[in-house]
Length: 67
Image (cartoon, rainbow, N blue to C red; front, side):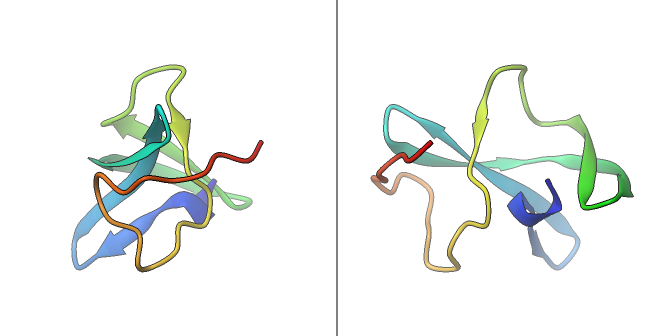
């Protein structure tokens, strides 16, 4: 989802979750349509992406997962 993207200048990233810890992943985004974004590189299948990450979230931060 486009809401998961964090865009800083020309860099695009997302936060992933692993064992209740947030990790920043630089990605290459492709086509965008209807609120969704194609990810060309930077993520592996099955990784959990954090939707609408707060601006204060940082790499390595402990998080509470709600599904």
